[in-house]
Image (cartoon, rainbow, N blue to C red; front, side, top):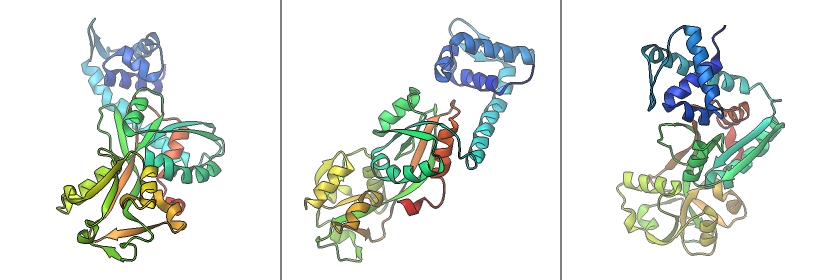
Length: 303
């Protein structure tokens, strides 16, 4: 009998979850099948890997010794998939992902076309949701992975910065600030703002940068807080206020001459978008290929 990577993956998941039943759910297997694979691994090494009781399981000394090797084997397989995904253009499969609002509405649609040309046999199913919903569906195995606007701190979830973005001051084309090369904070605070709601990724990036510059956001004239970028753009176009948004989200309006994108003096609203997926999950090659595509350095030409 040879050492089996599948069994190492199951062993690692049981150890991580602390339960055969929870591991079975994470791996989409039956509990007896998980138990059988762990027992086969124990037979291979000739030693017990877990101490079992009616209430809980614990790693044995041998299990604790094996755990880092199992983890490293999973990481090696992931790295192998990433390396080979650049060459495997004819792979087939279905890619299921969740994307936060800015990503799903304005950035990914421009990238899915080029991706589909490179990988014509991968079909894509994307849900546009808020970060909390994406996390819930990743944890519930309803999505392979998600793309969100802020890092996720959860013990079962891997978070990786995968795309860069920058927020800019957005004003109507006929606004008094539209002809200024650079807008000072003093000038900025004279005008009403329409912003995303508290807690959104866009709002958080803006507030953190202003705080870094010792500016109190309470000094801003916030006349509206809206729950979507589309609603904010409509409000700005109607002259209700100016805003701070991802410049990728207003590319169409800038091209039409409706908006102008301005730089605020000494302030840069830079942020990353993050891929999230379960630590215990080996992503399908379709998902690995998509994330490899997103990591490419020349994506700016699509945005």
